[in-house]
Length: 193
Image 1 (cartoon, helix red, strand yellow):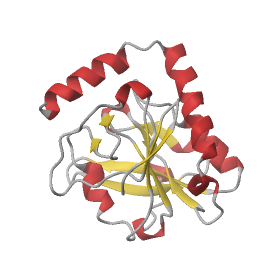
Image 2: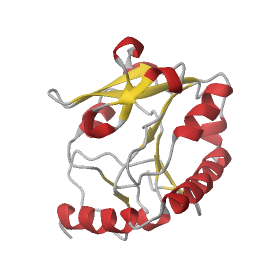
Image 3: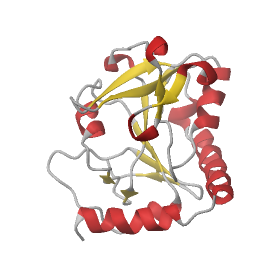
């Protein structure tokens, strides 16, 4: 199935969820994430989260929980002209975040604290669809594909998704990177990496 068709199908499914369903399912995703040893590991001290928008898995609670535990939390600032993500240290979600590119929350002008991507210990990744092999269908901008190349080798990639985003097969390109885990409200999928 072409990527554009699969995106449209999954968006329609995800967008059909009510706000209450999104929050309830997101709580399930957060509970599953808590069970993942690589996430609980003290060595995963610097974690980069995506900040959710529209009908994505709601990550705000996970971000706040990580901050409360004393973790170093990074979030992306988008540079649309260069199609780049800049990891920025988040200190206070209420103070630091403003609507950015496509209204996705991101660090405001006074709250940008860039961090070298090589310092990231664990990357929490968004996406449109995933399969059981860890293949990911993104939004089509290539932001994360380019960002993966800037990480230290072996940094775990953990995707958060609703169960309805899991499909039989995601179309892949030679440069696509597989996720190490896909976490839904129902299960943790350890991929074939």
